[in-house]
Length: 285
Length: 257
Image 1 (cartoon, rainbow over the protein chains, first blue to last red):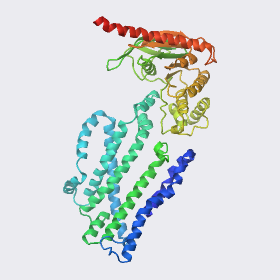
Image 2: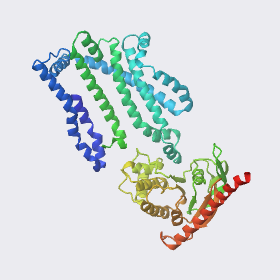
Image 3: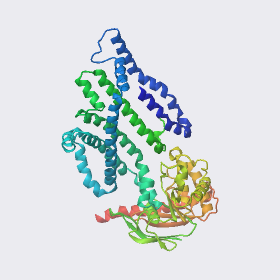
Image 4: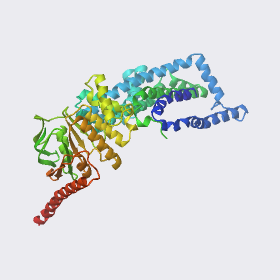
C-alpha cells in the first residue's frame, strides 16, 4: 500500500507540467482520485473479508494467513532489521545486474544499429541466444562463477541485456530517414547527427526498454536467489516454504511488489523530464 | 545565380528521373516548377539541395559546384519535419548552432515574428496546427538567411484557407530577405500567384517542357482575371506536355505490333 501511494504521488509531476501548457487536457487528472479508489476496492474488500472470516473462526488461516498476521510478520521482520538485510541484498543484486545489462545491451545495441556489417555479424547469434530461457544458464554460471554473488549477478545481467539490446537496435532502425535528412540539410557532422537527432529520437523507446529490462531483472533475481542464497527476498521465500511460514512468503512477495513498483516509478520519474515533449506523456484518455 | 547545367539523374534502380535539364534562376527570382507526378520535380530539388548527386551535369551556385548541402541553400519539405523534442524556438534556431546565443535568439525571434508566431516560441511542435508547423519549418529554413530557398510542395498538406495565408507569409518573408525561391508544386493557382516564372516539366525522363513568364505586379489579386488567365496558360502547357507523352505511349506498342 505504501508503495502505491508513494508512486502515485511521484507521478503527477510530469503531468502537471504538461497540463500547464495544455489546459484542455486537465480533465483526466481530475479522474485519478476515483479511479485509484475503484482499483483499490477489490483487494481491500478481499483482505477485509478474509480477515473477518478468520476472526469469526470460519477458517483457520493456516495456509493463507489473514492480513493482520502478514502485517505483523512484516513489522517484526522490519523492526528486527532482518527485512532490511534481505532487501539490501536483493537490491544490490538487481542494481549491479541491471547496470551491467544496461551497459552491455546499450553498447551492443548501438553497435548493431550503427553498422550494417556488425548487425549482420551479431544479430543472428544474439537472437539465437535470446531464445534460450535465461534460467538455463544457471548451471553454467554456477560452474564458471561459483555459487555466490557473481553467478547471480550474471544471470540478472543476461536477463536485462536482451530487452535493452533489442530496444536500442529497434529504436535506431526505426529513426525516420526524413528526420535524418533534416540533419543533412543543416550539414551536421556524424557526431552532431548522433547527439542532436539520433539520441533524442531513440530516447523514448530506450526508456521503455530500460523499464522492461528492470522488470526482468526483478524476475531473475528471484530465480537467482532460489539457487542458493543465505540472504535476499528470494531466500525469505524459500525459507518460508521450507519452514512452513506462509506469512513470511507473502511478506516477501509484498516486498517484491513494492520494490518493483517503486524502482519502475523512480526510473519513469527520472526519465520523464527528458520526455516532456512526447505526445504519449501528455495525460490522455 | 543558380545554374543547373544539363543535369541527368539515374537512380540505382535504373530510373532516369531527369535528363538534359538546364535551368538558370536569377538572384531573388521566384520560380515555380509544376508537372505531373513522376516528372522529376523532387529529384531536381534534391540535386539543387545537394542531397543527391547528378549522374551527369552539375548544379552551380554563384559559380560554385554543389556536391553536398550548402550553407546558402535552404530546403522546406512537404511535411514540416520539425524535431519533436525541440521547442518551436529551438527548431527555428536549429541551423544556427554555431552562432552566439544572443545573436541566435535575435534571429529566431525576428523570423518567428515574421511568420506570426512570436509568443509561441516555447511550444512543442505537437501543440501546433498543420499550418503553424509549416510556418515554423519555413522559419527554420530561412533563419540562416540562405540565398536560395527550395520548397518541395510545402503547402500541399494544408487546407485552402491556410494555404492562402501561408502564401502571404512566404511573400512577406521573401520581400524581407529576398532569397531566390524555387517552389515545386502541383497547384497551378499557387504557381501563378507566387512565381515570376513557371517551369512546366514532363516525365520519362523528366525535363522542362515549357516556360511561362508571369509578369504580373505584386501584390496580386488571387481571384483576378490575370491570375485566372495565367492559370489557364499553365494548365494548357501542362496538358499538352502530358498529352504528347500519352500519344507516344499509345503509339509505341502499336508500332511494335
